[in-house]
Image (cartoon, rainbow, N blue to C red):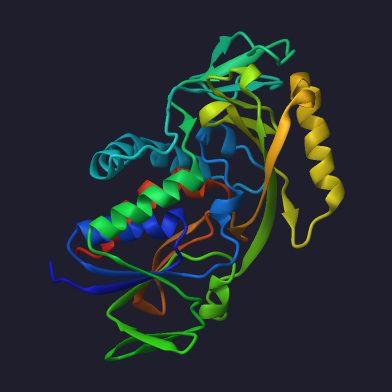
Amino acid sequence: MAVQHILIIGDGVIGLSAAWKLARAGHRVTCIGDDGPRSTDAAAGMLAPSFERHHPRAAGSLGALLEEGLTFWPDFARELMNETGQTFGYDQNGIIGISFPSAPSSSAIETEPPAGFPASRAWLVPEEGQADPRLLRSVLLNAFWKAGGTHIQLKADAIECRPEGISVRAGTERFMTDRIVLAGGVRSAELLPGAFEMEGVRGRAFLHHAPELKLTHVVRTQTVYFCPKSDGLLYIGATEEIEAGEPAMFDGLWWEAVSVCPPLQGTERLKVFDGVRPALKSGLPKIGHWAEDERVYLALGHDRNGVLLAPLTADRIVLAHSL
């Protein structure tokens, strides 16, 4: 394998997963990202293919990709924790679904609703789980640095493909590189005009201090989810708002969450998360070479499933750059 200089545009979970894996494979890797909103900032980090495959925006073939993506997580998590000595809220001990008219997947097992959730029926989907996206991004960045990668905080403004190499302009800087991985958010469409159509789906969620709930699993309904984090913290999400969205949607999410779990009413809100998920019109992410120039690799449009599909996406990127 010839060592290449690879520039990755996008430093969320997708971009940094690819950057770490490429650097480990021996490539010279630079990852750039700006200070704008990341889809990582709107993510709960659920690893939940059985639930996500039924989402209204999901294409019919998305389910199989999500199921495959879940199988990459155990090795990915083990390698990342071994190399950094850090954890990031990862578990695959199952997700509990409540208020579903039937089992959300063929592997689901009927179980008791968690304490605080007055549902009549609940299902445990084994082997699904979560990771904390904000912790995960920090750990990935450390792993990337340890592997010899370079991270630069800049906004990419333009890509120009030339026979002698690819030029990327970012502010007053200009980078020449052998190959590019475009793994940014909704602004990525501006870098390759006409190559794909992308929309931003705004997601807002909140973090509460709720140790009295003592949740041991992620809990999901068809429209709201509850992700227990470390130290008694609970991530509750999330709205889905095309473009600007409405304040009423955020209020509605809260009252829906309280109706599902009444003890939330007395808990302390610590933080509100606000981010934009990049979605393609097809309902599927694009993971593959750009048809116009194979030196440009696209890893875009993961929408709600960036964390779940990050290890699979990184693996495909490494394979493509080993040929």
